[in-house]
Image (cartoon, rainbow, N blue to C red):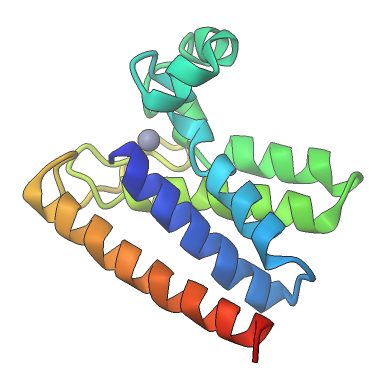
Length: 157
Ligand SMILES: [Zn+2]
């Protein structure tokens, strides 16, 4: 999936996650979630996030693309690591990271969520940067605008 799709879905997942967990600050929660939604593609040196955070990308690209870094284990580890710091930050990172995996599982290439324990791959029908992904991105954008409008309406009643 493209950077922008992950960003939109990560933000959307953050807004929904915040409302589900009744967090205090939706802006912080959704921003952390959006950032976390970009982490998995650090295992690919040519991704947008890798070009921004090159030192991390150099390390994570030692793993194969859509291998371990695209499994549920790193977000679980991050969640428990951050839990002692702050529950909502931990939850936002976990939700954002999972949103990336969920979106990638819709692609033809798919993801192996339990790699390397179980090599089973979940895949869908969307090709990265294809017309269908662009349709999905527009739908995510529309949903995001609707949620943001709702948030602003509640801020300034
Ligand atoms: Zn990915």
